[in-house]
Image (cartoon, rainbow, N blue to C red; front, side, top):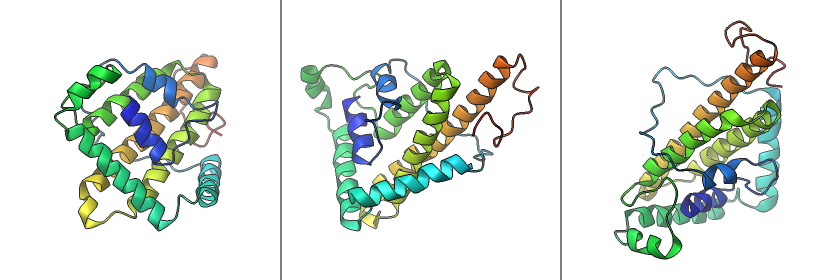
Length: 209
């Protein structure tokens, strides 16, 4: 868990705001899930006006923090490479004896596998969030995906595996966003006494904006 929090923090995703749901979810990861399979026909819903505003704010924030500079991105990718190497280190199991077990992680698990564990836990546990929190969470998740995609632009041939990992996590954040949108629709329908299908949920309705 410590490792994955380090990855997210390193990539510029905001875990410090009171609205962030990332840390409590990470702290409770315990179930072992199979690899997350995104359907081949998956198409993310269009970006809404409030999401576009969130991405614009992210751009301004990244610029003010200086994390959008090329040399900073290269440092971040190098840090990701080091973290990736940690997952391949045969001594990880011994190190965990000193720091304690990491929920959801088992020795020998790759970063790809562990990221799937964490994100599937997010999908499972966000179902307990109220609509207001889900709306904020949707913006956070999209911003995280956007941050990873921007970082990927600085990948080189010698960081091919790190590029794959950035794409892997980013794709799953986009999928998580879609699951959040669906959950908002379901909860809104329940409040109205209607099923998800009956309200003919639309991504641009008042339930999202």
